[in-house]
Image (cartoon, rainbow, N blue to C red; front, top):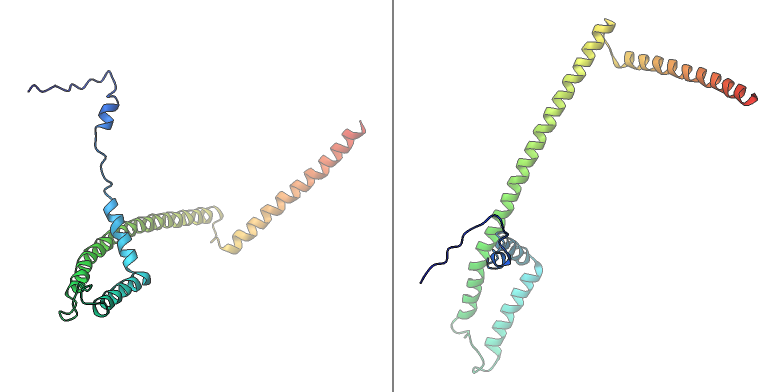
Amino acid sequence: MARTSRRVTLDAPRGRAGVLSRTPQPSRDRFGRFTEWIARKMGTPWFLLGLSLFCALWIVWNTMFPPGLRFDSAANGFTALTLVLSLQASYAAPLILLAQNRQDDRDRVQIEQDRQRAERNLADTEYLAREIVALRLALTDVSSEVVTKDVLRHELRTELKTLLDGLEARGETSDADTAATDER
């Protein structure tokens, strides 16, 4: 039987056959989400209530119904019930552990991101602190006195007062100019 050679040519698209012939890959995360769903459901009061109701119905069925309808004898200690509960527990424990491992991985990533963010914040804070010190040193060199908050406030008030006086003076002259312009 002769093999057909599949030559790949780059001058033409592969076509739909190449895309459709591939089998879809299952999500790598699907089983992990399933285990988390199981762990969340098994940790609810409804699950415990349902499991308790299941066991109670099993025991009532196998003790109260006629012997022909019973499938698990009380004389043997409800062996089938014990096996069913053991099977449920043997699957539940690994699924819960898998869900916890996934949560640990997410927590580990979150902790690493928090650590990186804290490092950036520390670097930014140190940079800003150095800049403030540099500004204080520059102001001290200019004024040859130690600059305090009170000195800065006084300087700021003086500057603002000068600016306001200048704006008021402009406002009076501009009002006079607009009045003169209106008369013409």
